[in-house]
Image (cartoon, rainbow, N blue to C red):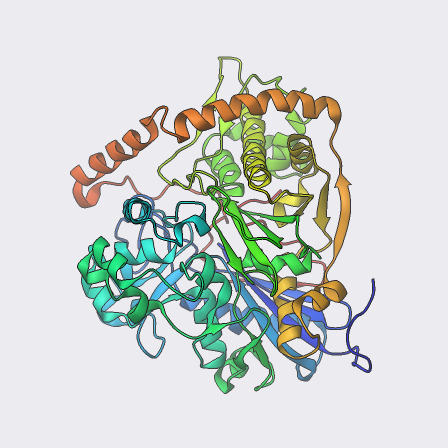
Length: 599
């Protein structure tokens, strides 16, 4: 690998990358000269994801909510960062920068000086005061209104998001906050991505990053949606962009500031080192996978999958999550799409649908339940289970952009085995990705190379399914810490070790090309099965049958009719999945847990 670091640079300088995932935060120590990963540590968030009850009171949360506690993010800095440095065996004085990435849109209300409203005593019992995680989908009614009004008015920004904005994003969640808890809305001074809040904690400065602002904050051509448009949604919402959202924008790879004395004490790192502008876990991974050229699509596969790709033209792709100038690297248009449930679907299935005898057999064999189910089904011929599934248990992010949709498994008989349903779910996520890839190609931005990062790439069978379904070779990032490595690359640029993200990625990124290639016989069989998937996809997702929306409405009405005792309590989870224990594990060769899935 060619080292493009400037001549005379010392090989013993290091940067820290911190990846904030759905269930945990991970810190990695990386050598600047060649991207070698020398030590890592992970912290499971003490409060995990609050999707059933509010931790502070035990109160039941409504359907489709997903909250977090911001103090958990700071705890990652206090524990995982120094543990990673210890594991690496380096002198902290040799660290020249730190970079971070976050799930998105993960957003929270703050006071003028950056205090989360959930940390104020008077609001500790108010769900809307907490972090709304990316998979908080309860703002779908607000997203629907935004989309309808924007289409009616011909808003110029709407096509940049494939014609639909998501309930996961800043404006839909902000409108929900206003309409369901106006006191919290009025009290907040800033509506901030967690990606930017953690940088505020590290530097003492609030800088919005160009990535989340463009993709999740509807910032296009330097403008947010107009006051007039926002007032038409709700008169009290007119000033949302100007008063709650708008702020200084930081370019990706730039320094947002330097490490404050307080943050230096938390992390054990030198005060004054560079802190990179915040970023998103998917987008920051592209240079770590040496995938920043047009046509290289990177799929970061974990609890969900985010698909990112650079292009040298600006075009509209139906149902994409957005296209942003410089949204991944400067000088190119960054495109994003995604699936809101992938690893989460597999985890849901094994935790709730697989008989206990299977778990016992997996334990006896010394493998995970996911590995055991895969071993039972991997040799079955394509279509041998007689099933087809829709991967919408967490709604559809792309290309339908509708989180009121839900999952389907079609074709079950009295002889259907649990492992066959599991395989159908694996295949469904591959079909969802193929739908995205084909939509991009039809819009003039073809995918020439498909690259996978994230924990799910460890499942070789799943990767082969994707290669067969997509009819594309699958390249894989040669790092188990893709987002954290990407954050470290941005930290190196922010510290001045490289001139730009492309150069840093060339020196520090890692990629294994064409690890999986399509099997023609399997690919042909999957073409037939995919045709059935698309039939169901369009029937349930494009208005052929609105039953999924009606069922969601029935569920909401039923729960609302039962009042505060509506929910039957939290769904039991597999031991350790959402553990409330605070534990740090450090190792140079640590294999990270997939977000919600251990394959």
